[in-house]
Image (cartoon, rainbow, N blue to C red; front, side, top):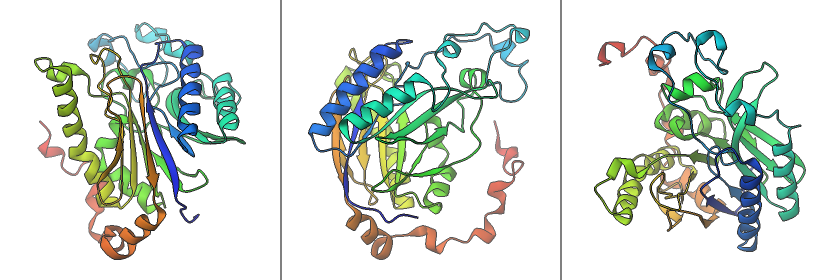
Length: 318
């Protein structure tokens, strides 16, 4: 595992144009250049930044006929396929990966962004790519799919990789993944210094009676309820980057960076297009690990067997 070095990281949010890869890649290029001018070495974008995140609401009765992880709608299931499959591309040879690499090379930065990946198996994954000036560094497939829609459209990922992005080791968890704290602990144990958290979440629908500024504050409070705990409990940096919305109706932004002490060190202000830049301090990381709290060191894994037992706790389901 590589030692961590101090560097500057940007979280960049925007409202993508659904199904318009060209427009969204142009926006990614624009924001990456802007972040680079602010000294960023790593620029992170949201879940499905390349083609937007929107699904038809499939027939719930037909969903029940799908066994296991779908990964691709079959005509035999009687569920209408959506444009996601037309937008899905192979990685790394697809044009989106190559364009992200070009953006990274032009700005001499690491760029991370979400897209639909078409695998050789013909499955489609909710994927997050990490690229640098020299090409693809790695990718992550969303493991915990949102019940209902995502389970129909995507194949579930099967692991939690950690990638060397240069100044640090980084793991990724996409949106709903972040509500399963076991995943963060696994990444920390595998050597992640930084966890990337791309999202499309916190629409104003949860707080319709509030003004947009008040709803955004409520969204930020909700995010911080669990985000600070994920960073603090695992003594890692966390980069939460959420989709923006120019109207403030579909998403509320709130992208931010949290340090291993659980403190917010950078955050966006707008609901729409915005970026925030944070200095990722290696000295702080190692100080926290060595002197303050490093809970992984004092675990009792011999007692944690029930966590790996899928039947344990089922009686509490409602």
